[in-house]
Length: 107
Ligand SMILES: [Zn+2]
Image 1 (cartoon, rainbow, N blue to C red):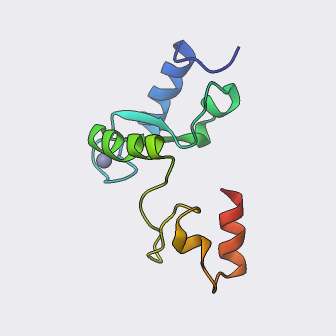
Image 2 (cartoon, rainbow, N blue to C red; image 1 turned 45 degrees about the vertical axis):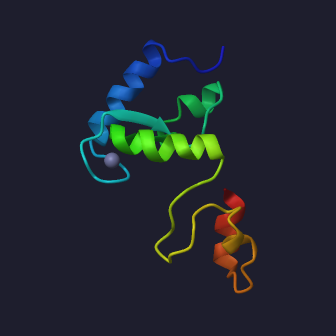
């Protein structure tokens, strides 16, 4: 029947916030449980605890919604490269290592 924001989701959400009460982006107090990958009604993704992250409201509103609207991933990795695999820096990366390529193809 697919994923719905019903009783099952509520239990999962509470468990996630208990497990990880801090915002995944800024480290502040989280109050929102967010799907890392958009579930689009998919039951498996929607209820997958590994697909959840805790966010505070400001981070959720600014970062996540921009990501969903633009279809682009914002931010960068610890190497300073944008995390969005479609970013020109990543597409035109002549010195891409094997590990970087593997990480990119998994996205
Ligand atoms: Zn935050």
